[in-house]
Image (cartoon, rainbow, N blue to C red; front, side, top):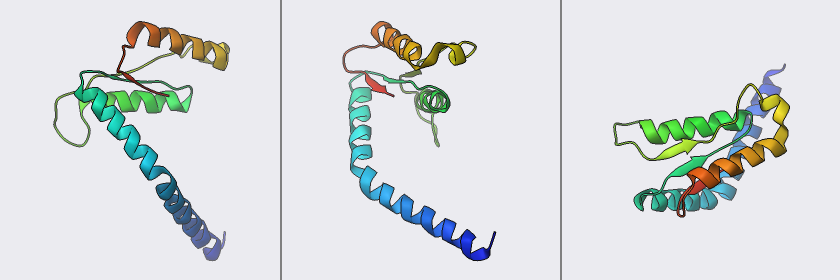
Length: 115
């Protein structure tokens, strides 16, 4: 791979990040405000996902509960789960129904569901 091609990859990546920052800054800020309001009102964050998104949901919940970057009291959050041994057999529809059931049982008015 040529040096010019490598440099172009970096430039393209930086341009994409700049476009994403412009497009996503306001929606991300609104989501943060909604999550902060829910937590301030005694509600919790419920996160879920399938495949790699399940790992991201678990990381978010763990960061909220256990702290992130500094010492602070834990915040109420939970990552919904699918049975990892069945994930390949269940399919998206079954996972969606499993998440829906968990939200019905664990969720309360005012909680935030992050999918």
